[in-house]
Image 1: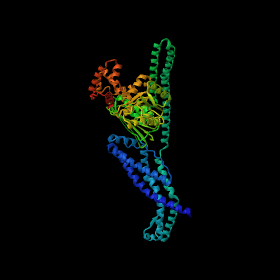
Image 2: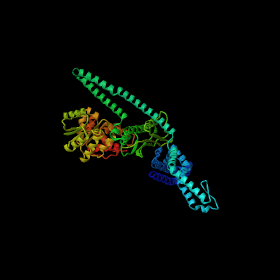
Image 3: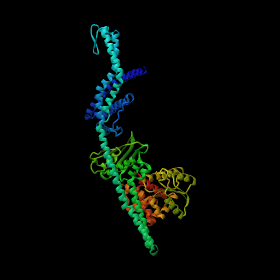
Image 4: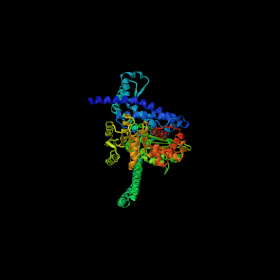
Length: 421
Length: 215
């Protein structure tokens, strides 16, 4: 008895939920689909630049609500595959263009559209069945109870039963009972099926996962290669630099020991040389350390390290930092060297006399932009410093964007997903 | 003269203690961590503190932070900061209160005992001792600007030494010129840069440093 009762309750709850959801599926998805398609078309006229980001946000909210309901109502989990939505790229028209481009390039945007189409058709039909199977039988019972009289002269089709008498009215009720039983049994499954259907469209596809694996393999190789060549460079620098100087110093000290009584004047001269050579060894070690992990970065974190870096440039610079904590050491280091390379590039090639660095973190994303008022024309290509930055960032799923029209200004934007502590 | 010394590497701490004692300084305390340094500065009230930037337990810029905090509580407390690397950013923070009695040197500078001791004494007396590397960084950034470009090479040299915190006497000795010649150079520098002339040596140094760090 108890299980029958709970079965009825579950079925009725599913029906009720499906009823509410069917409006969302039909009206919500249809309206959003039409508006989105319109907005994408209007990008060509410029109007779409303003509407597309907002609409996409609405579509994603709509889809996210369905994801939430799928998880809570039917325990169907649909992954959220959106690339982070850039909210604070830049103000004005350029920002809108960047945002729209980002949206149109995200495969999830197109997947959402396919889902809207499916949701307002097949998705809706499933939902309609889910609640109609529970509501339609009520009409059958009403027909049997006396409503059949209304149709005495004018046959009414209840399902496949033509109703025009008490007998056919009872037949309608019998069909209603069957339908009700089917509905009791099927409605939770139908609701679940609706969510599974949504998942089949909304979740990332196998190809995308395969692409992701390719990308991870590639960046891992690059990271390993970079680490190995860095170690080789460090080994070489130590071997030819500090190590050689220490050997020379030791030798000099030996000679001094022998000379100190015979020729004190010469010994004194050599002592001065030994001291000079220890100072040079220190300078070399300091430069080497700066290249491995800059001391300011270790002591103060990314913000101050970038400020210190900018202060060393021969170009006037303005650095703004908005960080509420510190990122993990490897991320900090990658970001620091990426900025360092971007700045070096700027100083070398842009011919700028002013530059701006902006470092901030929001919504799980570290964003750094380096802007200069130089001659522009920079591009990510083979052998350029910019592709080096791209490789560095790639290891951390970071991305690099360059906007550099001929005549300037150049803006290099870097993004790394990470958390602050 | 009583010194509080903070350095976490035993060899360096020991070496500094020996050197300072050899030049008749009294070591009030030689500590190896940030908390100990804060305590020693508050309780022992030394004439000068010699502090390593990086100290345990955090191994970040703990020494620098302790020194800055102590100076906020006791403005003008002479502090000489030592580091394996010098950053204009840190120099700026040390100089920010405009009180003088600040030194910021690379650890390598202890190789030349006379010069190092001279720097400690200068800082203890309320003067300034800036590492030549900091100054050359500042100068390289400003070299193309007007009116810095209007300085003669000789004047630039004087300015560099002055910014390190050297007195006219010391500059004259280093450049092998008379003190009067140095004085003439400095007044030229000040008029070319449009800085107010001051008789006070330390004010003068701080003005030059502030000028170089601008923009």
